[in-house]
Amino acid sequence: MDSIIQFVQQDLGNPGLAALLSNPSFAFIQLMNSFSQAMNLFIIAAGLSLIFGVLRVINFAHGAFYMFGAYIVYSVAQEWTGNFWLGVAAAGFGLAVMAVVIERGLFQYIYDKEHLMQLLLTFAVVLILSDVAKIIWGTDQYSVSYPASMKGAVDLGVTVYPTYRLFLIVVGPAIAIGLWLFTERTRFGRLTRAATQDREMLSALGVNVPMIYTGVFILGSVLAGIGGGLAAPFNSPTPGMDATIIVDCFVIVIVGGLGSIWGSFIGAIIYGLVFNYGSVIVPNWQDVFPFLILLAVLLVRPWGLFGKPEGGNA
Amino acid sequence: MTGPMTRPVLAACAVVLVLLALVPVLESNYLIDLFNEIMIYALFALSLNVIIGYSGNVSFGHAAYFAIGGYTMAILLTTYQWPLLPAFAASVAFSFVASGVVAYFCTRLTDIYFAMLTLAFSMLVWGVAFKWRSMTGGDDGFVGVDVPAFIAERVPFYYFSLVVIAIAVAVLWVICHSAFGRALLAVRENPVRAGFVGINTRLMRWWAFVVAGTFAGIAGSLFAMVHRGMYTESAFWPESATVLIMTLLGGMYSFFGPAIGAASLFLLERLTNEYTEYWPLVLGTILLVILMFLPEGLAGLAKAVRRQILRVR
Image 1 (cartoon, each protein chain N blue to C red):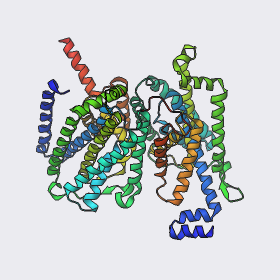
Image 2 (cartoon, rainbow over the protein chains, first blue to last red):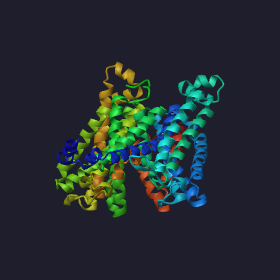
Image 3 (cartoon, each protein chain N blue to C red):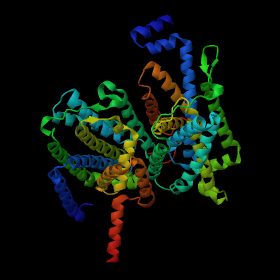
């Protein structure tokens, strides 16, 4: 083992990789960082994927929803109440309200239009929301403090690790299981799955399909809001955060397969691992790796690891 | 499109060309720069329309080729001190090769997956421009492009850019109205049937992508020279969305529509910036109105108005 480390250190000239090999607790911290980042991204990406799965719309405005979630947490938790969890709840509620307005006011008219129209409509919403955020919150970068109960770190034996990040690692799978139970075990979830299969038939059977669409859109958007709220302590709310997160989410949902919850889960973990280990092994280029994975997946399985191929792919 | 329509189109082009050539007479630096940039964006939007309007695929990463052309030009002229012609030829060639490689992969897919793959490639280009600091200047941008002395002044550069763009647009027009352009339309309207009559649909879509990428590269090269610099924003995805909006605003089912869209959007942006900093808000609202009420863009609106007038008569 020592000779391998020496080889990596001296012949390959890669101190990052050598540090990973020689220092298990450093490697472990990277693993934990990957998971906590992945789980935060999963919450947001799952919302995007859920909306696509049912509504068949790729929502560029999802990133703006995330940004609003982060800003709302700042306003409610930092400025008004001082309670972080109240802030996250407010972010979820605020996004639910926004989702109803946007879906009923705009999106419901474009489900039958071409994909170009849909993409551009959601982009119009991005432009409008990003400026609305600027009007409300200005262009400052805000800092949100960690919730009082989770400021410290936990001793995991191998190393100590920040409590809040551990919390994210736990909450991600919990949300994944919750979403899975919801779609597989509840009546609304069954109707949702039916709506993805055959909308006309469902509607002919007397089910209020537009209401299912609105419901799914709310659920997906609330996930973006909560994801943004939970990210606020380490991702300071600032203009432009919407444009970066949406691209990360695209990578995750396409790698995992559009419309698949577990696909987004695995996609997020792959993203987290590649990003964090990539930044140690080839510093500075970590932003490029996720796109390389995306390209690889799109070329081999354009419908993603867990997705199903759609008809009409030439 | 050719035949009866050709003569009025040519006449209109001649008029526009003469008007553009007369812009420097006004002796306003502001106007010269404004029109120069409008022309560049018009070419950019026209090039995108070859993919969208003619082959029927939505590229969400067209800014990549604009940025590749621009960065190549900036780096060759400045870092390597190449003369203008070889640098221009190389940047066009590089845009051609880069879009050719990307097109090889993208044309395997259609629809949403095509759009997503073009987006992914453009983000890759953006990532490289952002991180390759020693070559591209990273997020500070590539500042201080050495424009050759004979076109370094504002007016000579304006004419240089006018000539290049006029030739580029003419070539694009010929391409789009050739048998190749017709075949592309067939692919857009019904790929299965086009395949049955013997058109190699994937090859046609590849060529459409490459033509679009190459001409976007030309537009980008001129952009780098007029701004004396190149910045990562030019490769970021909202830039791709902006040029899509220009194309859509002008009307993607007409050849010159996108150029009109580019000019309108650009002028509108300048105008809005005089009054408010919230241009994106205005743009988003315009976009909503177009999508909801004018799906065929300004060119479609013009057609509808003409039809109405004819009917009244």
